[in-house]
Amino acid sequence: MVKKRLSLFMVVCMTITSLVFSISPITARAEDKIMDMVEGMTTQEKVAQMLMPSFRYWGEGDTKEGVTELNDAQKATLSKYSFGGVIVFAQNCQNAKQTTALIKAMQKANLDGGAESSLLVSIDQEGGYITRLNTGTAMPGNMAIGATGETENAYRAAYVIGKELAVQGINVDFAPVMDVNNNPANPIIGVRSFSDDPEVVAQFGAKYIEGLHNNGVMAALKHFPGHGDTNTDSHTGLPKIDKTYDELKQMELIPFAGVAKNADFIMTAHIQYPKIEAQTYTSISTGEEIYLPATLSKTILTDILRTDIGYEGVVITDAMDMAAIAEHFDEMDSARLAINAGADMILMPVDLSNPEGLAHLDEYIDGVVSQINSGAISADRVDESVYRIMKMKAKYGLLHDDSLNVMKKSSRITPSEVLAENTVGSKAHHEVEWGIAVDAITAVKNDDAFPVTSDKKVVVLYPAANQANSIVYGIERLKDAKVSVNSDNIVSLCTKDMAEENVLAATAGADVVIMISANYSADFTNQDLANKLVAKTHENGGKFILLSAQLPYDVTMCPEADGIIACYCAKGMAELPTGKPNSKQYNPNIPAAIYTLFGGSNPTGKLPVTIK
Image 1 (cartoon, one colour):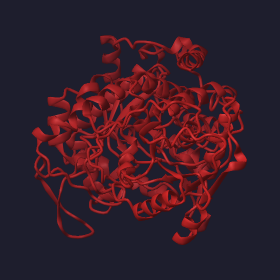
Image 2: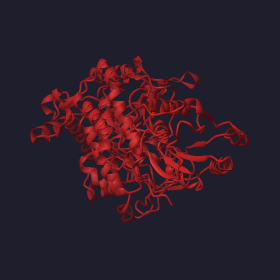
Image 3: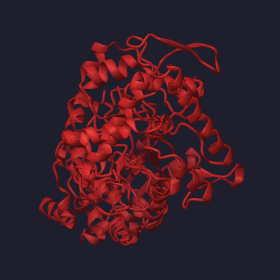
Image 4: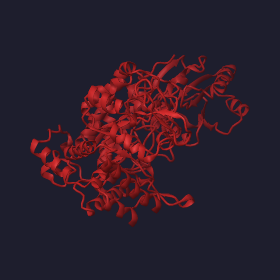
C-alpha cells in the first residue's frame, strides 16, 4: 500500500517538474534598481503597496453576495491603486475556471493602472478544517498529518495544495499554521496545529513550506508569536497570554525560529502579552486600558522577530477587521501602531463590499499618507517595508521588469483556465489526500471491537447532516478495495435533533454501535450521552466504538468504550465525490476512519497531542 501511494505521488510531482527549484539570491544590481523603484514612488503608491484588501462581498443586507466577477467600480479601484496584493475567500472561488478568470481580471486591472508589479494573491488554504477553494483537494489537515508521524506527508499535502493554487494564479498561501496547540481549550487553532510539541511543529512546518515553494507559491507562517495557548478567538475577542519572553522561547517561538529563514511571510497574532509588551491603549468601545497586541507591538515584531530571531521576510498583520483590533482601536491608530511596530503589510484594512467602502478606502489611504507626512508614521519604516515587499516580488518573478526577477517566466506556472480545470481536484491529487488520511487514523483503544466484520449489525451515529455522505463514501472505498462489507447491515442516523431516549432506542439490536464525536475544545458536551450509549450497548451484548472526529481530547470521555479511534477533522461532504477534476471539495478524514473500522486498513497513526 505504501509503495502504491508513493508511486501516485510521483505522478503528481512529475506533472510539472521544472518547478522544483532553489531560489538564487537577488543580485546587488537588482537590489539597487528595486531601491530606485521604491524611491521613485509617491507616498500614496508606497502605502498602497503595503495594503492587501479583499473583494469578498458586494452589496448591502440581503443583496450582499460573494464576488465571483469584478464590477466596474472594483476594477477602477484596482487600477487606481497598485496594491501590494489581494486576498481571496470561498465567496470568490466557486470553481477552478471561474477563480482563475477572476484572478486574471484582478491582475489585468492592476496592470491597466500602470503598476510596476503583479499582485500578491493570497488565500487561507491550510488544508483540513480551513480551506477556501470550493473545488479541489482539501487534504486531511495539519493535526492529521502530524498523526502520521511522517514529515514527508506535510510535503505531499502542501505540494498538491501549492500546485492547485498556482494553476489558478494564487501565489501566496497563508499557511502553514505554526502554532503549538498546547492549550486543549483553544477555540480557534485545534486541529489546525500539527502537534502540541514545538519541535514536531517545526519539522512538519518546514516540509510544508518546501511543498509550497516547489510550485512557486509563497508560504506565510501564522500566527506569530503563537496562538496555541489562548482560550479566546481573536475573530471575536482580544485574547491575552500571561507568559514571559523566556516562557515563549521554551514553547511558542520554537517553530517560528526553526523555519524563519525559509518563510516568505509571517502573519502576526492579535494577542496581548502583558509580560512582554506593557504599553496600553484606551479601547474605543469599552474605555478600558488594554495592552497592545502583538500586531501593534514593536517589542514583539521588531525586537523579538527581527532582531532576536533574525527574520528577514515580510511581516503581514492578521486581518484588521477582526474584533480584536476593529472593536478596540481607531483605524488610523492601528495603522500607525502596526507600521511603526514593524508590520510591512496590512491585511483587510477596510470593508470594500459597497461604494461607500471604496470611498472610505480613499480616506484610509489619505489618512495613512498624512501620518507619514507629519512624521507620526516613520517614513524610513515605510520605505523599508515597500523595499522588502518589492524584493519578495522579484524573488518570485512578479516585477514587470523581468530582468530584476530571480524566478523567470519560464520556471513559473502560467495560470490557465484549462490547466486549472484539469489539475484542481484531479484523481492523482485525491489519491495522495486519501493515503495521508488513512495513514493518520489512530487507534487509541481496541478490545476486539474492530475491524467490524460484514455479518455484524451496525448503527453509526453522527452529529452533522453532511457527515452522512462521509460514511457512504467510506463504505464505497471499501467496496472499491474489494473489502467484504454488507451495506444492508449498516444503519446511519443523524443525532442532531434526536431526543436522548430516541438515540438510545435506535441502537437496540445492534452488534456494534459507532458514535462519531466532534468536539472543538476540551469541553465535552456529548460525554453524558456517550457513556449512556456505552452502557446500553453493553447491556444489549454489543460493542461500542467512539470515533473522535475533531479534537482528539475526547478520547478520554468514555473509558468503557470497546474501541476508540481518531481522525482529526469532522467536516462532512455536501455531495458524494464524482471522481472528476474540479468537483466539489471534500474532506477524507471520516471516510478514512470508516474505511479503517471495517477492515480497509490497519491504523498506524499516533496521537500528536498529549492526552491527560
